[in-house]
Length: 336
Length: 251
Image 1 (cartoon, chains in turn yellow, purple):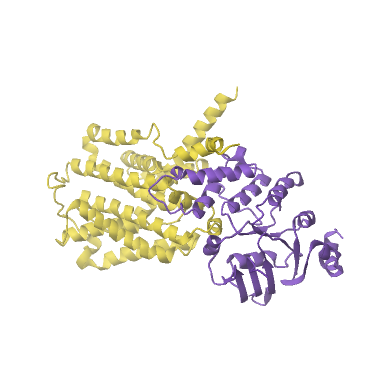
Image 2 (image 1 turned 180 degrees about the horizontal axis):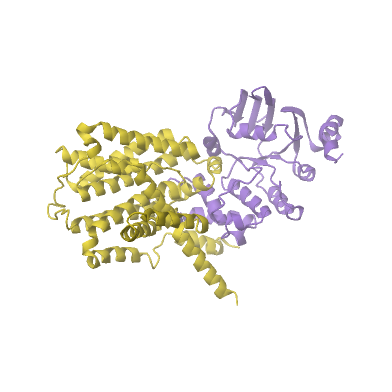
């Protein structure tokens, strides 16, 4: 077989074209944009949804692609949120876009510093250490009341209009929604590019077999630390967006509750799949919204049951379930 | 005498009171076909782990092309040109066969740290990986996930990943282990067809494979070199027959 014929092999064609835009990929973005026009009264919910999608996307890079098991990702969300909050509240800096960049830098720096120590470990040890990092930050934010507002957090953050033109209105968060959507899109493009790059490919290799990656000469720890830092920076941007959109920041941004929620979202949607964060966040937030309306006292029971079902029947989340169904459908059609 | 490709001098490792490798001095020349045999627990895999840098020796040296690499880390030894296969498959099970080999080739060609270009844009990596699969007869499996392959084919992927690193020294840890005898000829043929310039050290229990393939044999017993010589000398050595070949029923 000649080399040209080999490069036309279906497997080679798959690698060569894997990163190309698929026909359905604009749909989520069209839907998110349509949401702005169709549900103007739900834009507050929409902003919360967009920040959670971005947060889940950052976790997907670390957990889904590189297989870094973490239960403390809210540490970076909170670091970003507090960076924006403290700079604005103490009158140091509050221009929205540069504030976000500072939030990313701060969260990324914490990710780098903690990652250098943490990523020597794996499994349960790693899980506990990520939890510890988050608990330390939360306690620091609680004790440093002079700077962080302590338990009450910082409210009424003075966020100036975007580009000096578009007001952040707490009642009609139109600016916030479009701003969050634009930032989410940019971060998504970055994560998607990384996921399909040779670097992303090597992260998948580390997830699938770390020992083998050592044996092919990969600098495994550096790859993991790099990935963790980027993931932390994106989580910081999500936290910064959250603080700007709500004009406040409090300890909930750093808590286990948020870290667990984002993990549930990712598992629900499907991890290691770029659109898992989207599907998971929409499913989780829509469901908790409506369940809380219908059963104000016991709405979390419904979510719990759903998680049990996902864990039992759809290990790869909603996207995995969809894959299974379509595969079965096409197999049946091909059979007779 | 020319500088050996890979050499050990007085290599020793102790796990507590157990001396898993004792004062092993070994040399592997360019183009060598060297086999390492010995009863279970003789320390064959431990020796490979010492050569590849997974373990650090208690005493002694490892030299590569005359340079002391005893302190060099595992990943850096791979970059120097020392690669191994594993006794038990260590593959990227969720990925396709081509993806498995892509990862190794991308690492060697320095493509792996690239972040902002798609993996498919490195056509050189894809083409080299495909060519490698072709030489091992794996082209038809290129798109299959590892988990879908029979074990014998998986062993070939294990070899393909290692060959993707274009090593100067290849350490094969029981390449045909666990492969049904009907398929083991595929592995044997692949091993026999390895490029001549590679120095190969092979561990195996299969005496047919060892005596067909090797030009030199080292017998390891209880972590120490028990005998070394050509296959003829080893087969004729009464002590070796007593401790090893006799037991294996090939005497």
